[in-house]
Length: 58
Image 1 (cartoon, rainbow, N blue to C red):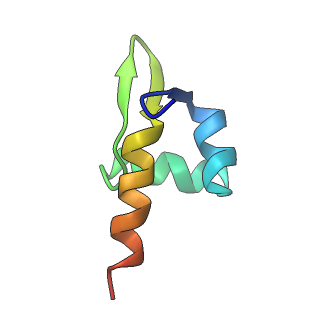
Image 2 (cartoon, rainbow, N blue to C red):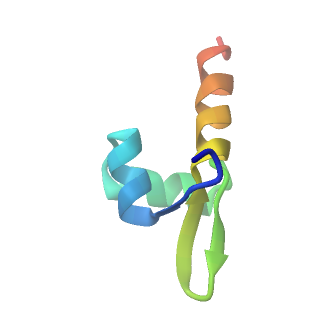
Image 3 (cartoon, one colour):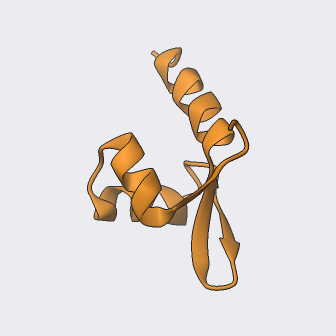
């Protein structure tokens, strides 16, 4: 499902990055994320679009 919500840990595993790296990206607003209460959430479709954009950056 394209609008699937990922937890911080699921997003970290999906992106295959260290938790400190993902947290830094979130804090610096380099990756699309939002908070549901106190918990970070990521829309998989937006992560995929973000990844696609990263591939085209030189």
